[in-house]
Image (tube, rainbow, N blue to C red):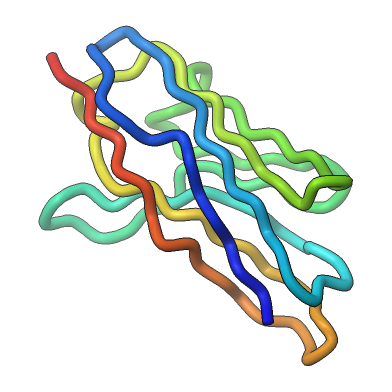
Amino acid sequence: QVQLVESGGGLVQAGGSLRLSCAASGSIVSIIVMGWYRQAPGKQRDLVARIITGGSTNYADSVKGRFTISRDNAKNTVYLQMDSLKPEDTGVYYCNADIVSFTGRNNYWGQGTQVTVSA
């Protein structure tokens, strides 16, 4: 059984910074991809950033140059450093990962953490 646990959300003023963390635990053999998705009220859940084994990264155009995704393989943890935050960054941020466990490869979601950016 695999779990993703997020932390680090909160309320911040525009221009500020937050750092999100997501730790994977359980019967993990390897982690293929870890990433962050965002869902604003009334909108679909969209990719913010992801990092693939080996270090390749992808970012949504709206966050390029402001957000940085990184990964600590020893801790099975992914981070999202969010700088120069804007009100439109507000939403629930979900951690997502493709993980190979003893039962095979599956996709997992965290419970979500709220990020609110005030103008």
